[in-house]
Every structure is written in C-alpha cells, then in structure tokens.
Length: 235
Image (cartoon, rainbow, N blue to C red):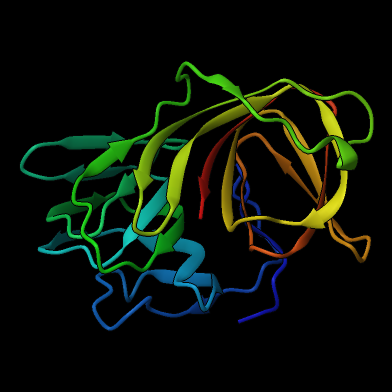
C-alpha cells in the first residue's frame, strides 16, 4: 500500500480519479472479495476504497465494521429488524457481526472505510445529512490563518472498541496551516468545497458529492471559502 496521503475515492460526477486502487479483500472472510478496490490499508486495521457491485448477497456474520457512501446505483440493506434504502449520496454503517442481505442494482458503487475489530456491534445505522448538530471544538488557534470558525457536529455511530466515530459536521469558512492529520478520516462532502494541501504543495479540491480519505499522520492543510457540511468517519 502507498505511503499516507490524501486519497480521492470518488467524484460526484463519476469522473475518473487518479488514486491507485488494488483488487484486494479485507480478509479471507470478506463477503465483498470480488467487488472491492482498496486505496488504503493500514497496519491499524483501517482500510478505504471503492466497492463496485451488482448482486444480491446473504451474509450471516459481517466480518468488520464498514462505513459506506453510495456514489452510483441503489443499495438495499436488510436485516430482520431494518431495511435501509440507499440512493446516491446516502451513507450508512454496517456493524461487525450483522446478519444481512445486500441488494445492489447494476452499476452500483460505494466509497468505504472499514475497521477490523473482534468486538461485535451488529446492526445498521443510516446517517441523516440534515441532522441537528451541536457546537464542537474548532481547530487549534495556533494553526489557524484568519478568524476562528464556528463548528458543529453530531455522532450517529460510536464504537468504543475501535474508537470509531461516524456522524455529520459543519463549519463556517476557515483556513489552517498543514499539520499531521490526527486520525484516519473518510469525508463525504454534503455541501461546500475544501482544498486539502500536502506538505509537498500538491492539493486536492473536494467538492459536494465527493468522497476522500485522509490517513492518520499525513500532513494536510485546509482551506474553505464557504460553508462546509460533511459526513465523517474517524478513528
């Protein structure tokens, strides 16, 4: 796998991204072994990439926890207790140990971030992009360039065993200097645009409807000139 970097996983318009992917299962038990394209696989059990699927799968015991964001097609996730209908832009968490059926239309694709864990957290969690948010801490003053933004967030899913948190965050515009990213993070922009810049001067502009993964430790600066709202999965 490559060195830690900012990895664009999918664009809203379906255009090709330069991120390299490998056909690679997350484990021998991965039920999506024939569908998965991995862009990042860390030593801490965190992986990220794309799943391209058009099948019906019955899974007795989902072997890891996976956050998914639908970029094309339509997916139905069914358990005995729940049925989630996921169209383009919808996101959900499949907990470790979930017994479910996955129904995916032809041409379905989702971005994913997965966590290996031995602790079951069975169930499905759908994320509400319009969730009511509460004030959260802004970036540290010493790394800000300009005014302190107003930030808000709400966790929809938390796993104490892996320290995984999944939810929705928003912020007024701000700019900050580059620093090592504190956590592994999958971001899906619901609204707005942000430019993420590496220490080598390379940059990735992430727009509404795009998914990007930033590995823990990668040097990354942030610049947004308007309101930003995103789905996040951090560990």
